[in-house]
Length: 419
Image 1 (cartoon, one colour):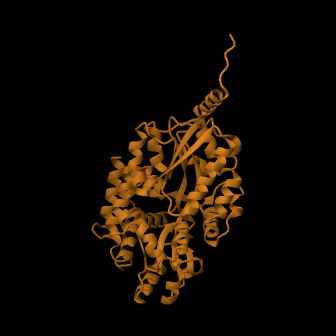
Image 2: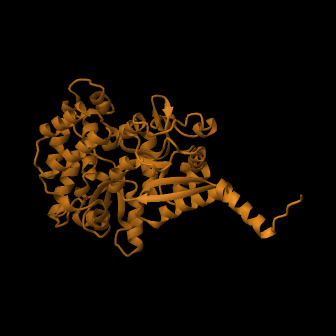
Image 3: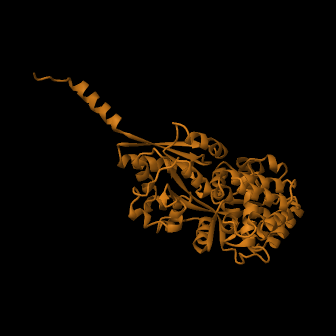
């Protein structure tokens, strides 16, 4: 018997078969403040889907703090993303050790690996297994509103030492201008101060020694001095009124609207400044400057060549399909990384992609990273979730002057001992 199906039915069956064959890859990222970045990631997903019509990329975003608090629960559920944003560090290690991540070592091509600095790739290996891929490098620097610093008579380019910076803060404040804007409610912006001061004091091995059980651990001199120098700054009352109840997002708006002369933040601050400028905020490229975190007198990092920031990228969940890894390799292709550089979205890591960096701020940061003798990952990620949270807590408490530098160091050591 020769059975025939009506054309419409046959077409519907074929379409249904195609839809069923499509693999979906869910990607969870920290929320982005501007449309340029969101459009970039959407364009990447669309370009990948066009080249791979059997794959659907589902991009999802969660605000920064919610991302950190919800992710542990998500990873234990059936709703876990296939790929999620990562700052690497011990948080990534803990996720791997908990069995949440997939070993993708055999899936990533040698061609891809050969285009990325080994140190960047190593940040995503746990016990020899590759559990994610880096996407870009980040550095924390001081951003300066030169319209305000010029009014106060301060040249940001002349700030080289911690004493220079304290003097600049005093001068700016004497001119009736708030020296520093910070989102203290979120705590992590404050931990940049304690972290940077510790590595300026102790040098590149500061954290390696402390976590490796060398000497006095987190009770060692660099951490005590970091707390002392941070409180030297705090005693000058440099932050905007109500800084401990100000969120990161609100601080971004305040800085863009001439409410403070300096802000210590990563290069991701730039896209938000651009976005605010488009909406009429006075801060723009004409009155914006960056400078490196100052060195400290007698510190081991004499030339300030140790950088603090991130090796940001993606972790791959244990049940993620192979296509998730192919998508990550696609994002690392030179052309796609160069486009991000041209748009001023991030500092690319793929060989040759940095030629696309157009704006002077990113060029300066790219040079810093290129000349860096050691790149320290953000301590609230490098030390894992629990110890990292303690670092954020003690940084906020130091800023609020409710604990001493010694108590701060003790609390971090205790958190490390009982992690």
